[in-house]
Length: 364
Image (tube, rainbow, N blue to C red; front, side):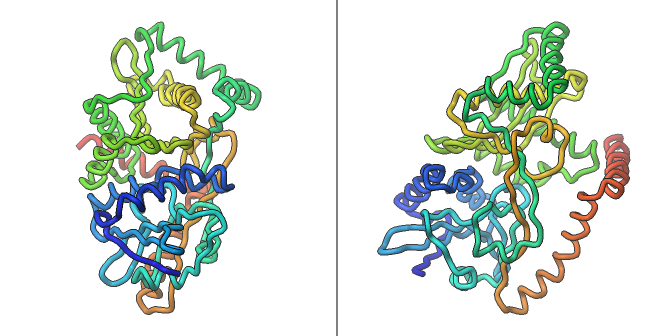
């Protein structure tokens, strides 16, 4: 393989265009999962402006770019997926039929190990290193919103009826309900991040927006837009007041759901569910094929989904002492976390403890 590795600022306009073209044609080439915006050059370049060690490997055949592999690495040769921890889709974007030798790719990238936690399907050379595979629910809207809604009514009649009734009640109680699919007001983004931070603290989770690089990344992506990529802020208003919001990333055919939150003062109306239905309607009108709700077991995802994709976590390693040491440190932590998440008898007590700690922390 002819492999060149670039810093984000060194990637040429030609390579960016070729990378984008591979994504835009992915659904026609039998690999629709490669169209995810987390696999886009815009996301990799944005992370590169916020984090050190971002690199992009370009594989060429006859001088033409046929595969693009973004990653992050340390000086010791430990590699991780770009934006790991906030990226919901990872892997190599490639032309149809292309395959690669994982060890050869890592060697060319100067990596002893490459760690992933949302490896997309169809990455056979990496899948041998997967330690677990997990569902990522999606909402299919390629046949139009009315088709999606009718399927939702058939599958979950009570949920659909209740959610639509709550939207009408919100309008009666709080004032006119208005939805903006692509809100450009930066103040609305700050409101959403404040809600999300409060939610993290309230539920005892780590506040992602306490990390300046994540806040900077989201703000960058909010201002990033092209024909094939955009950061989309969607907001539900009642009488002109924001009651729910979501910031996600859009490619030509996929809306990747990322940061949803709502004003707890309106929780009885389930504004987050109302927002997701409005998002589905607007996305369908924009030609989006599906909304990717992301890995993670949540009741609202089960209610809204039409099917599930699969993402994997694990490591690809070369024979190297650094790879052995990294995996030895990381494997027990991941195994414990996944065991807790997968077993209700463990997860529910742990969740209660986190929420109790979150309440204590919120009071101080």
